[in-house]
Length: 321
Image (tube, rainbow, N blue to C red; front, side, top):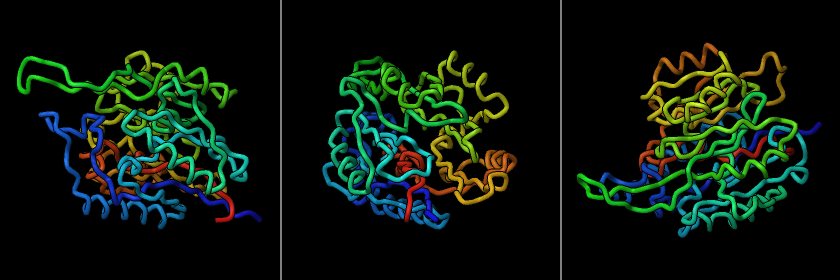
């Protein structure tokens, strides 16, 4: 009998720093890049890794590279298909992202590690900006594709102090739908437009959770009005709207995990969330039969703009580990 075990990818934090300053969390109000307390970050990273292991997941660690400090956020690396199927690794394909320029060098590292782990890899067309499962992920009966207006990141003049502001934009081109939709067909893709630069990836404003990912955490202000209506129509009572304080703590940037090998009706489901989320939210999760696990990864959010889910690349069930 094959032993299937949910496996995730995490990036060694030994060289975590702010290199490009490519989202609003990475810079001060003056526009200067923030400085990382690396010892604190390393401690928080280990606590997250240990919590995942304690709940039965296998963690594959991507070696650190001093030139690529963003490797701590492997949710941007790409996405795996089929994700949840219990199939041998050589029958699954990891589609590598086309990352923002300051992180483009990470791709070769992900390709090497994933191939060494036994997965096939493939490319998304190079002319399409796309940042992986951070913007393309299963939720209930659909796949969500999140996108926003792409910008050349830059400083522009403004009235006030300071006399400039940073333009960031978003990370995934809506045109990538034409490539992605056939990969998951006949499963439909629901497109969601993002509107707040501080929530520049879909997994910072949306999180599918539960044994079948049937529930959806969502923060309305980060979503375009038409997209929000589509989410409401699709998820109905299964949509759990976040409050502003929880959204600011990146409560949507959480990782859902349901152990395999249990009777479907009795499967216990977990949601790993950033520390500091409200007791009210935790109670709402428990009411839906989900056990919350909170981990403080604030150094990664406050300095790098990523929390629990950003730090985890989902490789699904893997055999023999």
